[in-house]
Length: 81
Image (cartoon, rainbow, N blue to C red; front, side):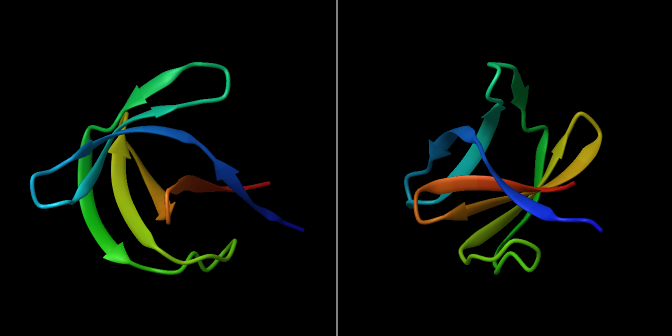
């Protein structure tokens, strides 16, 4: 059975003049850093797999699509185990 885990992550982000927040780099627990190549979509969305609410950023990182969530000031992505 697959269990979805909410994986908290450190994000280096840019704050625009208009107050928008854009993730620029994801920092893994072991210190590895991955730049966001492209933000393809931003929308208010609940995480259907692991719960929560906030903004969902659809990002391209190293030719892979990743859903990155920002809930208040906490960032997470979903990992299916």
